[in-house]
Image (cartoon, rainbow, N blue to C red; front, side):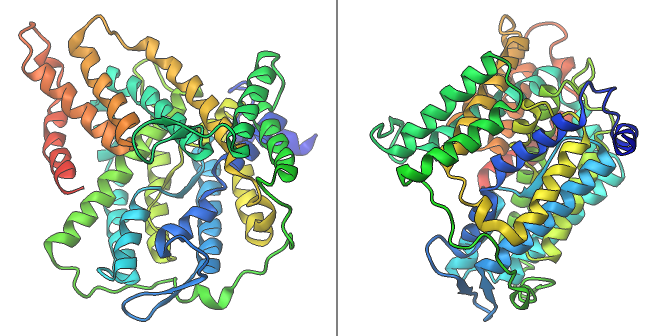
Length: 449
């Protein structure tokens, strides 16, 4: 009872209409939905396949095991700080975007691992400076309500796309096609979606988590997943020294490096902005103007995460859109983030157990959460073309170009263009000067990305 009292005071559980049990379930659900990062991150840096090590152009040996350990450690640390400092149900890890851009250059020999870490570090420092001086907060408040509202919808379409793609329900390798429904992965993903829907209909607590566990267990006899030979793994600490503080400043003073820093910065900026506002909207944490009170706190944690990522051998860090899975499970405070962080720390040792969770189990969660976030589309005024076109462009770019950063950037450019050239009285005045200032770098982002 004393522990409950401390948690209540620290996280303001009653004020946000939640409880300890709900927050723990939400944290576990978020972790389950984003545990794939522990598999994807090493592959994004050193390539997919069975190889356990990769040697870059400077002779630095990068090991898959070390990347898993550091990704889990930094993810846990930054998510813990997010929960304790910002008291928000957001989890952080290596962003899915910049990691593949830098990883491809490392694998092709165009960049050393040390070069890429310097790029990450510089972009993170820029983040910290903008956050400390309140510039990020000013930028967010300058963005109009229709764009803020459509961010949640765009993210909903994006994570639904991820669910369809990861599960195989949709085939996006050559156009947009239906997946192979005779594949047990696809069958189990659909079964999981149905199970979650039925449990949600009957208001079963922890429906998303139950769905993940159920499909993982059912997937064993189907051959979709298997119980690992070893439940415990010992971190390869000797290999971590190859990753930490591994900086190579040679050859970085050129135009291409500046472009990479720009891409890392804006990609992370708008992905985080979209996720923070979108997930906050779903958790009913935004005010009447669509702003998140004390938004500088999650921004600061996010920016420090990228700096730490550069220092400890990870790529850019960001707030994960999969946090919405935990919000859907009832998470409303930093306690859910603390729970997620604890699981990241535990996964360092028992990662084989967590990593047996197949895409067929997590994909239905993403699809279901996507459905719930798309419902915010009702708040967009489609009766006013000047207010609706920007959100429309944002949604279709996010859904069909496969990226939150690209979608948000395109939506902002379209919104500013339509309002600037509108003949309606007063429409042009709705565009904040900061929005005009943002357009130039956003156009450069598209040109060089």
